[in-house]
Each structure stands twice: as structure tokens, then as C-alpha cells.
Amino acid sequence: MGGVQSFREMCDRTKNTNIRLSLPAVCVVWEIAMIILFGVFIRYNWESDAHWAESKHNLSDIENDFYYRYPSFQDVHVMIFVGFGFLMTFLKRYSFGGVGFNFLIAAFGIQWALLMQGWFGSLDYSDGKIKVGVENFINADFCVAGCLIAYGALLGKVSPVQLLVLTLFGVTLYATHKNNSGPFFFTLNARDAGGSMVIHTFGGYYGLAISWMLYRPNLDQSSRLQGSKYHSDVFAMIGTLFLWMFWPSFNSAIAGHGDGQHRAFINTYLSLAATVLTTFALSSLFQKHGKLDMVHIQNSTLAGGVAVGTAAEFMLTPYGSLIVGFCCGVLSTLGYVFITPFLEKHMKIQDTCGIHNLHAMPGFLGGVVGAITAAAASDTVYSHEGLVNTFDFKDEFKDMVPTVQGGHQAGALCVALIFGIGGGILVGAVLRLPIWGDPADDNCFDDEAYWEVPDDEENIIPNIQYNNHMQNKDV
Image 1 (cartoon, rainbow, N blue to C red):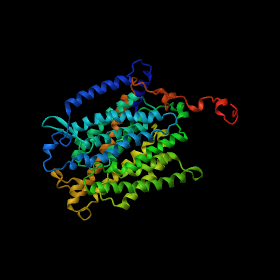
Image 2 (cartoon, rainbow, N blue to C red; image 1 turned 90 degrees about the horizontal axis):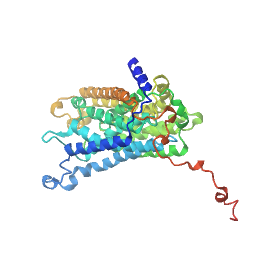
Image 3 (cartoon, one colour; image 1 turned 180 degrees about the vertical axis):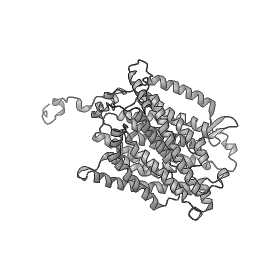
Image 4 (cartoon, one colour; image 1 turned 45 degrees about the vertical axis):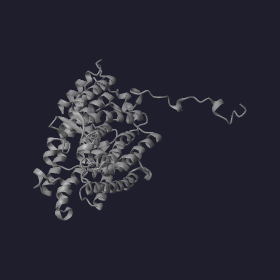
């Protein structure tokens, strides 16, 4: 703690340096690097290559993986660019930054994710190339989702260049520990179709750790801009509805073909439905005069989709999904009421979007639910073949039993926490360097720092003679 504080003080003393990394330079250099790396490493996979016509043998074109995966990719892609983007438009003067920088992070991160996940998981050692198809792009979207979650904790307080650095390191950390993409989860053989652990737990605590490192004791200088307006909350609710509708696709996109994917859709939808009712009830209960708080409705209603992610393709049972959704609605809503103020006051964590309540805690709960559900699996519930397909009990894991699999799931949750918190502290230390052009304390949560903002219509003095037709009916 003392070392971290000393580093913070050193960076604060050097804030006046004239060295700044500009956004145009970073973007241009990055894109040139991507062109070179893609040229060296990225190739079409066999289902997207023109040789498909001669290599498909007895397969028909409709059996190409594109037709199976692309509908899920569309849904996930909408969640990344529209859902997450508009969810962050609730601040009264930071809607451009919310949806615009979300766009920047996603486009930046997807390119790097294709490379990183290829190097760690799907590199063809026969020719040293990464073969990409539609499933690789789904996984790239998943990878970027963790960085967008982290952005939620820092919304309005960092520069676009800092966001690019956050994404660069976030994608790298994600790729090194994601299921079947790195040495840790591959050894553990953990299952996490909907990403409760690798996306939400990792992304949530990654963002919170960075926010802790970038703590601003004088952030109250921008307190006038930290609230929302009527129309900004309506725009944020658009993001909520897109996320809510497409979350079953998110959790089932890479689940096992057939029953696993079907089960993931059912479990996710039921959990989300239960969370909505629970959130409305708790929000009304804890607000004055029994009214609803839009913050809870925008965020806590989605927590059920987060928490059911790991166990989405397991035999969680429909009523089990409702229980998970109910518990998440309670946990997330109470988090906004009690835990978020506690974190800011006592732990110096300024969480703009409340990602601790929507992603971090529900993600952790989802990992626990997944471990318990896996440990309780049996031949009676799954059948022997069902156990093999659901938990991938093949090759070196062919002798695995469900109780041991439950332990592996718990171990994977710990790995996600370690990478999220540890990686966030390291990246936060980098982001404290005085070269990123971050906004001053009194200029946070304001689009004017980085965007050309049109004049507000309400600030324009009306021309009475023109606008008031009743008084000027003779004109």
C-alpha cells in the first residue's frame, strides 16, 4: 500500500510534463502494426477459404459454420456496439464519450483479440498461421466485452489514449487465461460458456483495480456533471433493452452444439426474467415513497444473465435458473444502495457505472454456481455421454469425475480474480504516468474535453417575434 501511494504521489508531481501521446498518432501506429501482423499471421480458415469447394467432401454449403454461428455473432455484436455503448450514455454531458469511446475500444480491441487468442489458442503449428472464421470473431467480441466492462468503472475520468492502453493490456490478460486459450484454464479444463468468470469477474475486478489506482480525491469538483437527465436515462435504457434481449445469444453463442446451446438459452432467459421482477421490487422498497430508481432498472435487471453464464449449458434446471436470477436481483440492487457508496468512501474506488454490482459480484456468484452445479453432476442427470459432451471429459480428462470438475471450476474462478485484480493494479500503475492527457478533476464527465459539442438548444435565446405565433399572428 505504501509503495502504491508513493507511486501515486510521484505521478501527481509530474502531471505538468509537456510530453503527451496524441490519439491520432496512437491510432495510426496501431493500425499500421495491425496491417503488418495480420499480413504475417492471419489467414482464412478452411470454411472461409475458396478451397472450401474442393475440401468440403460430402458437406453441403449450408453446413458451413457461418450459417450455424453467424446469427449468434450478430446478436453478440449488437450487444458490444449498441448495448454496452448506449448503456453508458446516462451521464448528462458524456453521451458522446459513452457511446463513442465504446465504439473505439471495440474496434481497436477486436483486431488485437484475433491475434492474441490465435497465438494462445488456435495457432496452426504446421505453418505458424492463425486461421480465422466466424467463431474467432465471436470470441474476439467476448474478449472486448471484458475491456468494455472495465471502461464502465472509469467512464468520464480517463482519456481515449488511456482507454486504448487499458484495452491493449486487457485483451492480453484475457487471452492468457481464457478457457482453452491459455495454460491455466486449459490445464483446469474449466467450462465457462457465458463468461461469468473470464469476462465478467475478470473485467469487473480489472476495472475496479484500475479505478482504485486512479483514485481522484478531488473528483467532487465535477459533481455537477455526475448525474443524468431525463433523455440521457432514456438512451441508457435502450442499451439495457438490447443487452437484455440478446443475452441468451451471448451465453449460448459458443456452447456445445445441440442440447447444450438450447439449454443455455433457456437458463439465461429464465434467470433474466426473474432478475427483472426482483429488481423492480427491491428498487421500490429501498427508494423514498416507493418509487423506482432508473439506475437499478438500467443495470440490476441484467445481473441474472451475468450470473448464469458459467452454468448456462449445465443441467441447472429451470427453477434453478429462477433462483439464480432472484439472488442476483437482490445482490445487484442492494449493491447500488449500500456497497457502491461504501467502496467510494472507505476503499477509494470510484465506480462510475457500478460495474461491481452488475458484473463483478454477479460474475463471482456465477462462478460459484458453476462450481456447485458441476460438482453435483451425475450420470443419472446427464447420462454418461451427456457428461462427456457437457464437461469435455475427453483425451487427458477422460477419467475426470464431476466432483473434481467442480474443484477445477472453483480454481478457474480464482485465476480470473488474480488476473483481474493483479492485472488491474499493474495497468493502473501504467495509466498513472503523466503522458496520457487525462482530464483534470474539474473537467471529468464532460464531452467538451475530447469532442466537438454543439450548442444546447435550451441555451439559445429565442426570437420572440418569430417563435410566438400567437403574439405575432399579424406578421
